[in-house]
Length: 185
Image (cartoon, rainbow, N blue to C red; front, top):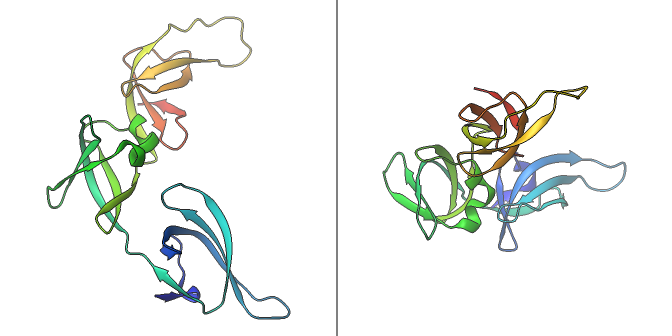
């Protein structure tokens, strides 16, 4: 149990049996009435973001979320296998929890896995990863007034847009939040 006066960014709350992460909070004292705490909360499992206002000094349940550094090993038919780098225990995480992160994960890559009561909640990847372009058409520079882009497939199977000068076999940096091209490596 914690008070709404003790909220911090990144804290995970257990509200009505569901886990919510505090993205933003602000103490607000209106001209009349009691102080309130405005928050922006993100549902841990679905990613839905909501605004919620609490009265000052309201008691809320905090959830213990353990974030561990794990190494992605391989994908078997049932899910993605990760190894805890400190205890060497292996954990299989289902496709529904991994989600779009699978488009950016390579074998032996490190990722942060959030666990609550031993159950995986989500996976945090670095902001950018380096991937090799496995196929792209040759770019023809011609009748364009600005730099153009073309589709390219990277080693994880994800298709991204890259500049015309990128060729098959080159390594590129890709943003893990939206899958955009960031530059050559």
